[in-house]
Length: 70
Image (cartoon, rainbow, N blue to C red; front, side, top):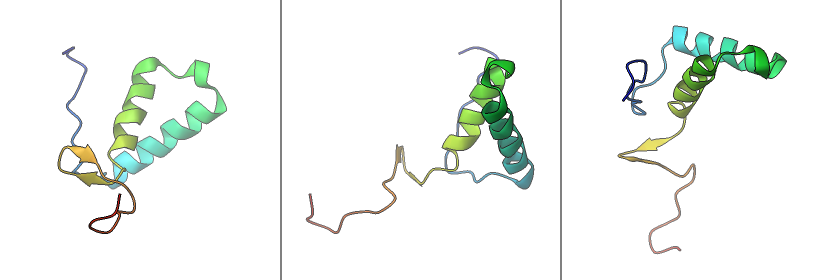
């Protein structure tokens, strides 16, 4: 693992400052993707993944099917 890589923990919600950082990165990427450094895009991805529903080691479906459903 490279020194700048961090383990992503999905079960930890974003703080207010992390939400603000993610929003600023989102706007920068939307306005001009080539002007955003790759490590900033990776940081956006890390933050975004933490906003997804989490269940143990997998990303949970937004709507779980009832027991016995396929």
